Length: 358
Image (tube, rainbow, N blue to C red; front, side):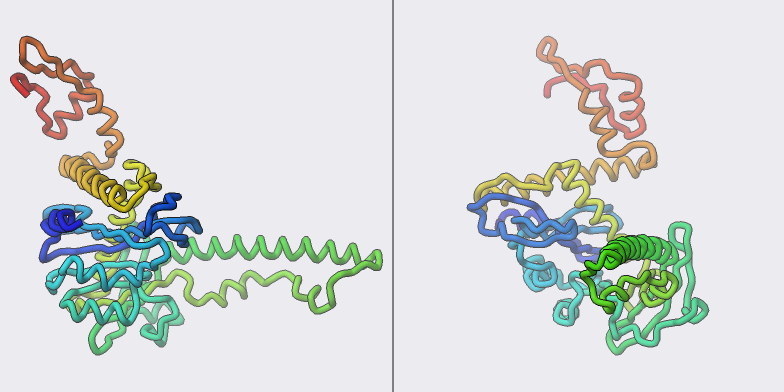
């Protein structure tokens, strides 16, 4: 682990954006110390390992730079102190971006004491965003994000800024989801009510009048209006040089680390581990880490060529894995490739016309 840390420390810049998040890996090994029952975002209560990852976004590109494993029963918020001491991020040029699972008063103090900047969400009902706007006209700012408007309101605190956002697309999705759940609840209640009325008509009622009254359908309009926080989220930061719009933009870069975990599970097939001891698991995690860095090297190369909308990582591997070389008279020659493969190599500036000793 010491050598792995030394390798990873070289990738941790003294400036830029560092994102932190946790990823759960399922394991059924009975000999792994860190394999503990835990509950993850996929609602799986299974033996798992909590893998905390750091992801760097800077002018040099994007890169997974650090990981550390914890027991599956350890929540993300409890790992923060350990991570900060382990990676030795002590520069105020670094802005740490995390999800709300890391937001606690203790963690905010740790970050500030480390001299780091941060952007971390708070709970919707936080007291830091008091006097919430009742109307859209009461917000301070409005800007567009991915084709829909975002409303923002600023709250200045002694050592930080708190921003409340109302996302119209988020509000629409959450409202639609809430209406679906309320309709299902009403349908279930109506079914139970009709069954009880049938039983009562036969003199075999099971529910009291009070219980029967509770099965009355909900008024959807009133029920939705009771959910005051729909479509909102709150961010806290000590970056006084950033306004409401810029803080929102930086926080949304967290989608990079979410995409990293999707690649970890699907492309690298690392959603579950079959390692049987701690040393083997650490080696497996490190190999996955190197593979993940190579994956982002490929993705960045695709992006640099302006081909993101045309080719994915899997597309590129599908084309390039068919390239072969033949040894003729002690020299290596690249075999013939298809026009599509050659076209992709030309676009990515990959030179296949190589001969000689390898």
